[in-house]
Length: 352
Image 1 (cartoon, helix red, strand yellow):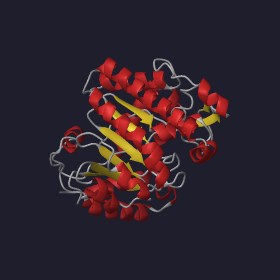
Image 2: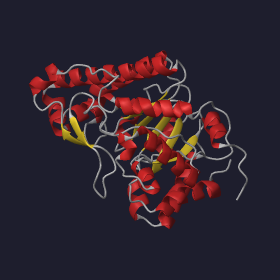
Image 3: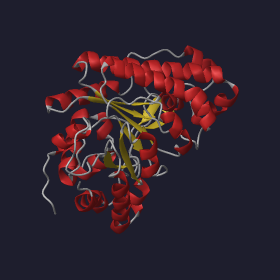
């Protein structure tokens, strides 16, 4: 195996500032797995910021990936706007799930108000996690949903989809509130830690074409997404990592118009080919992806290795850089050797 010429910190700094790296960086999308890996309940990743940070640091040490620990969950927005969630406690559960949605009927939409980001939902835990990052020499980060995903966490998705067709005024109000909420969150983090110091992840899986059409994406989602990103960058958020898993192929021409900042990262799922992502984003942003979590859980190490090899060989052609990453969160019961296999593939094929 060749000798690394960079530390993970140096490699990530180079990736996010347009400089050459020694090999393809390995980013992680690993949360609940980390707790189980270290012997804690999966729920502790979300309920206990100190344990969450610890188990992620220990798992990073074990598997040798380059990215920093982060705090986030896919159902963000529902609890923050007044709904109820349940922390994971079953054998296969890996993230908080909805117990009650904040919006159950049309009248509830008009009653919604922007939450106080200092104490809403899981944001206090997220802020404490960021303080832990800073205390350990890591740039603070905050993870939120995109506007449509937050809308789908405030309101049941099938109801939201009916409103997309028949009640677009309600959808616009939800998207407006979601956008303003993310801006409030970002403002709180920037005021706490300083302009130019905060990293941001935006997860937007619900805008996939399994849920809404590209026509509705362009008309409803895109304007809010562009506005959100432009305002975040103007606040001093330097890089945005935008995770767009799911079937997003027909949305890619629109996503290409969404600013991510200098050397932002676009993170894709298994449905989008690495070469396709490079076509749309490679001249502007780092492309990250797209190893299928289901294969990590049920596939053999040889299958994982081959998927990684293919992704790396395609991704190394990306003009602004490529990072090997899971296409979505690693399942809590994934065989540990399959996670190690991703690093092995980088060691074998990722050198520049």
